[in-house]
Length: 240
Image (cartoon, rainbow, N blue to C red; front, side):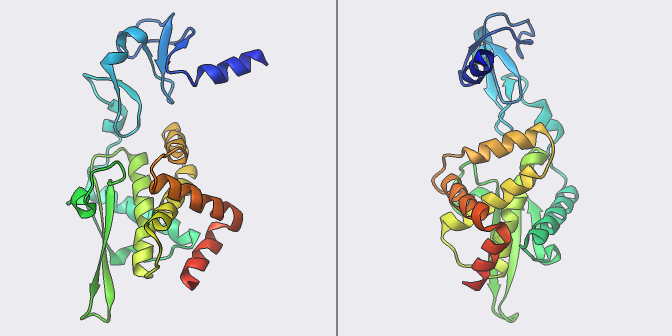
């Protein structure tokens, strides 16, 4: 029992005092204090300043090398990105967020930061909707996503944007916190449906997000969805 409690406390500390594998920088066996990330990657205290967290996955990586995992999994091909968008749109439709991805524009890149007037961590994708008065009031919806993200993060961003697509097409009115909260919940549920440590860590980051809009919105909508169910929550928005 004591061992389990010690392990739980130890993992909360920035540096631990136990034997580990090898330092990500010097590759030497660690026998003293060291830092360990959510992926089990370690760095000895002497080389802590030689590492940074990957901007995408938060792995500890040598400052001079960057994250080889995210580089290998980066989504940079437009056709591949469109296939993933179509796949996730289908998944969202099965959850009750129905729309035809063939009627939605999708591209990698664009003025994503400028579209929202911010460069914060959540501006990884943007959904823009334009009302076409000449075409019976139909909306032209376009999704833009930053290229170069590793596939797990890319997929979570696409799932998030799919909610904004559904909201625009069906003209659902919500507060910003409520809409971003729903987008984060759907993205979270999608991430949880995937296998792999990257998805597990990503889900944990979403649960603990301190952002007053995305994080608070997520926890507020998540509480309602857990009580009523996602489909019922969606139907209530459509009926409002």
